[in-house]
Structures are given as structure tokens and as C-alpha cells.
Image (tube, rainbow, N blue to C red; front, side, top):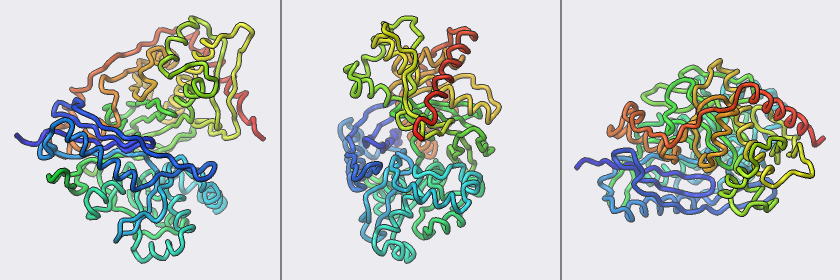
Length: 494
């Protein structure tokens, strides 16, 4: 029998997972291990690169062993990863010279301010599609080279390598034979010119980063070397950052198709096709993927607080015992619509980008119940998604026909129905909600020759489609109240 299984390695912020897919595209098994979070100072977030590698390798071996699949039956491995998280390591020893600086980390704010003062903000926007923010990898690399004794000279000498987590895993899986990334991850570094499809010399010079430490940039579906698993050689054939992988896994392959992932925050991406679309409305432009040398781009908007707002109800206010309780409790509120929660706990993300905003609750009366508060908090996820989608539609002129959803909160039927109502379009939840892992698996399966795009589309099965029920006048009134609430949270901190 020819190899017919694909394994997706899904290395996320909080866990390392391996997901086994059968020839029919369905999940045949999964293994997962939590990842330790390190907070050495306020605003700093780190991971141990060795723990990332060891946990991901162990999950690969576990899912193959536990589900009785011979490694020789695996046609390929796909990798998807937390984006922007930065590792620098010694080329000869393979030892990291500093803990991985996680995408959430804010220590590089001063570096970004310096670049703004040097007039690079517009250049960055035009050529990388991003904004000058500590979120991205470039400032993190500079910080490590600045802080670790002798690091920059070692980098100049070719002794040090940089990688986002996909690159780190590829290097380890191939025994140091391959130092590479894909276009989607490269586009999140603040160093990659997404117009010219190459590392940007001006930005490398501005951040004083030697080009010798950067990985080779490849197609998202193609060869990234081979690894040994339980004595068998398995090719690595697909790589994409987690949100781009989810876009691919949701089969958003045509211009104008969009997905929203409801996690700690929300990540809404729209496929904008082969033409780069620079946002005029506070969104990021990024590479979705590159296959057979052809690039597709995406617009991305991030909601800072989504599932974290439900965690606040559970841990902060302690009015629910678990996230699962939020839906039945919110249903108890019935038709009540007077309360609005704006969860701007750390400011507002896209499209507002107001770091001085703070959260607020509006419409409280003596009769307000905890059920109403829970319902309003769930509704805030849908309202924030609407704000981002409106910005995308304004940038592209494309009217969305349906929003494809995944992530933990996508299981909440009340929230998904309200999302459809407040957008006025269908919300589609797939049967396979592991969209990120599915995207990585599909990229690998295409390169292995066992799947193709048409087959992917034919295998997409909906769990449920939520159709809008709210009339246009009611929708407009509710959105107007939400916008009033948002405006009153802005600029709270002076």
C-alpha cells in the first residue's frame, strides 16, 4: 500500500500537538502536551525552545504509536506554528542563545519607537504590510543580538541562525540539514518584502541584523527536507503560520472568502487573491501562502480580547464556573438587549488601534442580571468581529457571502447565531473544527500528491450553517448602540 496518512504538527502558544489525518481527510488521531509559559518581567513572555522541540517530537511519535500507524505509511508532515515567536541558536551546537521571545512579548517597544522616529513607518507599511510593533520578529532578533554578549559578531560570522518556530522545528527534525521557512511565516517577521518576495535589505540594515542568520524562504507546499520517525524517513512537505493555515484549512481558496478563529483573541483573515491589498482601515496585509511559485495574499484583523472575556467572567467576576456554562446562562437573559460590554482590557485592536481605551459596561440598572452580563459579553465577540469585517469590506470592496468559523467559542450556538444576525450573512461551522491542523495537512498532502484542491473542497463538510434572522433595522440599531459604547471607552487613559 502506498503511504496515505498525513501528520500535522501544530505548535501553538500553549501546547504542542500532532494530528493524524487519514487518506479521506478525516482526523484519525491526536496527541497534545501543554507548553510552559515563562513571564520573567511584566510584559515579557518566553518559551524554552528545547521544550518546544522535545514536546513536539514526543507528540509526533506518540500519535503514530498510539494509533498503530506504521511510519512508512505516512506520506508527509505539515507544520503550523505560533507566528512571530523568535528563536536564535548556534549553528554548530544547536543550542539556543536565549529563550524564545513569544509573539505576545512587549519588550521591544523602544526599538519600534526608534524606527518610527527614523521615518520608517510608511516604508514598513508599504513593503511588509505590517505596522511597527513589538508583535513581530525583527525587533525581537535585534533585542537578542543587542543583549547577549558577542551575539551580533557571531551572527555576522555566520555562527548563529534565526527562525520562527516552524524554522526551529524544521532544523531540529532534519538534524540541522535544512534552515528554511515558508512565505507566510516570513511575512510576519517585519523583515520580508512581500512585494519583491525577498528579505528586505533596508530593514535588515535598520535593525542591524546580518542576512547570514536568516532562513531560506520556500513555497508553503513543497519540500522542507526529511525527518526520521521510529526508523522511517518521512518528508516535511507543508508549512504555514497558524492563521494562514486555518484560512487554507477552511478552504478559503478564492478571493473574498474569509474565516474567523475564536481563541483568546479573534483572528479574522480574508483571502485577497494574487494582488497585494494594503489596508486603509487599520488592518494588516500578509502573505496567505505560496504554491507552485504563485502567491496569494490576505488581509488580517486581530481582536485582542475574545475568549479572554469569557475567562474574565469565570476567573475575574466568578459568575460562571466554566466557559461551557456561558451559553445556557446567556439564554436565560432571553430578549434582553440593554447591556453592552466592551472588553478593551488592554486597549482596542483592529480597526481602532487605541491602546488608551479600557473596558466598560454600559446599560446597567438595578434589574441587570448575571445572565444579561454573560450574554452581553458573548455578544461583544460578534460586535468586534463585525468591526473588523467592515474594515475588510471597505478595503476590498468585496461583500462577504459567508463567514467560516473555528476555534473554541465557535462551538457556542448562541454566539454563532448572533454573529450571523449582526453580520447579516451566513456563518458556517465545519465538521472538522481543527482548521489549523487541517490546513497544514492539506498543504503537505498536495505536495505529496495524495490530495488536490478540488478534493479538499469536495471533502469540506459543514456541521451547521447559521443564517441571519435579525431584520436590517434592528441590526442597525444594535450596531449603533455598540459603536456609542466603543467610543465612550476610547482614550480613557491619558
